[in-house]
Image 1: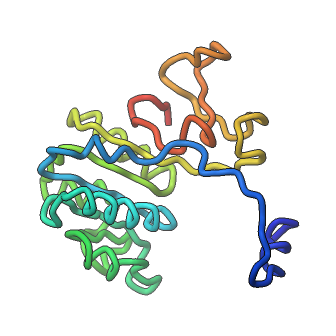
Image 2 (image 1 turned 120 degrees about the vertical axis):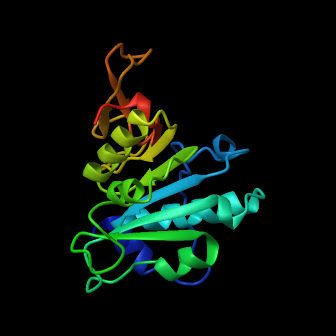
Length: 194
């Protein structure tokens, strides 16, 4: 795609690179401790980070029965990306836009259909899904943490190209914004305006 990708594709065994990272914030594992029902909601390319989160939560001693991944897909035809891997780690509920597998509709539709009232929600996926999860969590007084996606030009918070509107004012710039690359990508859902 660009210079960096070209360099990596031409790397040989033993080559070294200077990298900066990790930067930003991850999902807070401690927020799930002592919770009986933990929900991970994912859609599309938001699934891989949640699979790693599921594994990390399990490593802290949280049992498989306490964690449910609610995964949203377009249809059975488009494939059920990482479904098998999730099933090996946690309980899984599926939703598809066309109803070909699981609940017909969104991940929030699947939560409502089963009348699930989790103790905490972690989410990663497309913005409309994150907004729906944020609203569902707020309506039910459930803490939620969402991972936002945005193009990041610098990745270090300098260019301000990955801003998200926030409920509170930034102490540095005194505006209602946060940088997804440094203050995020994971935010408490109450902190951001979607």
